[in-house]
Length: 374
Image (tube, rainbow, N blue to C red; front, top):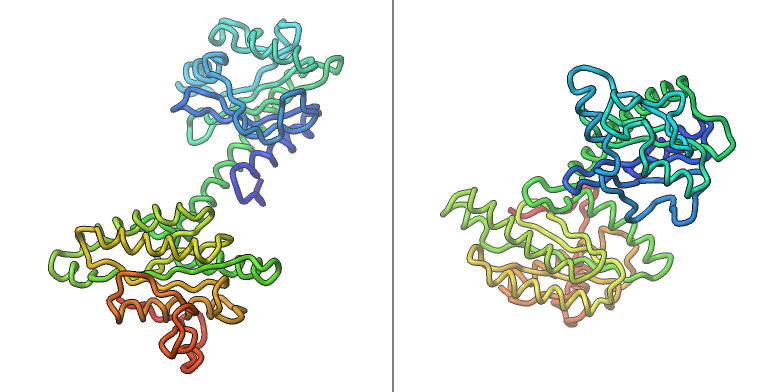
């Protein structure tokens, strides 16, 4: 679990580990989705029955069918007790580690009808169920089953399952913390869009696809006009509102191109990184972006430059070149106060960004070579 990068990977590692540790033929990790009132299965491992999938899209069960997760967990240990595992058998009789009815709500470990029916239907003889508790609240459950005819889980197995559920909870907590750290590392705090670090990583990956499979990679660079004037005349709070509103417009336009990364590069600079769509589709969306930005009641529209490997811009061997071309096109749009995007490689003549870059190469080096404008 410590090596997992996503919650799904973490749950998968936990399910594999507990199945092996408890000698089960099948194991699953489920999460309690309080807002939906459902117990949703994240992962199934081992011998899957008909209809079961390793990573199900929508295998979930109403929580009222499993009263122990809401009733027993809260009523029994909220006052200071500790949650512990129990055993169910396909015969419906209490197993060696089952809870007697008076210790919990009806059906909690004393022969839950839904669990018993599921065991029989799937050819399993018994299961051990352990609550997963995170931050003092019921998060979900760990479930391990054995085949019909194999030894029934005992008290020692249930106690061990409780320990494994605690280890699983610790692993899930770590994965969630790491996921949040990654989100913060690659997200712009003001707009919620991706940041420059995310763009650099995605662009490197995209250009590798371009070199290998000739996938079209397009970069749309935007400079929001009038931000400084808004900040100076109406205050930075209003300026921030302009950045957020333009970010929403950019996100809407980016959604027109499947798989596009929408980002704020810094200050008043934004971009779209499209991987796959033809250059003409990207240019069409860039034009839509100009139109929508011009309709905002704050600011003075946007200057947009486009550079795409689908246009005659020459070989693109590095992210630096694509950025420089899109940036040069954006500069031209800004200087001309253009209400339309400028596309590198399509204008011809000495003013085309491709020609201008060839005549005046950028000699700056290092990760700070690109100057952000404020």
